[in-house]
Length: 97
Image 1 (cartoon, rainbow, N blue to C red):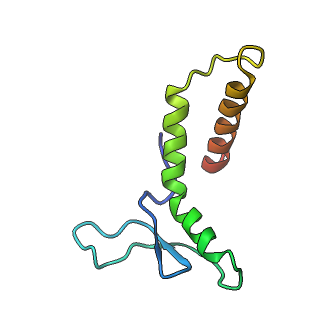
Image 2: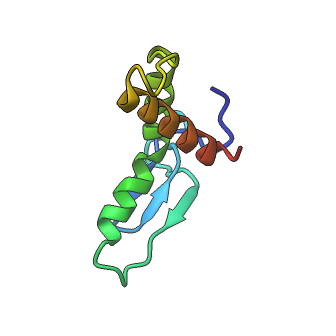
């Protein structure tokens, strides 16, 4: 899968800043800021953790759809067909298709 976003890993710095990977060979030098979560929300920590996990979640979802058969029809296994379609839709949303 070709990615267009800042590569993983992303990490929370403090409680609201998400940064991309640290510079190679220099673990004390943080990567570029990817996102900032406003502190006014009581969900800021949870939102920041979810954003930091986004590239890994996308990669895991992509791996799942590559090994999960896509030939299930709604008649054969409606749950599997719906899950596969939802996974494809989320991947397309994330990569901008």
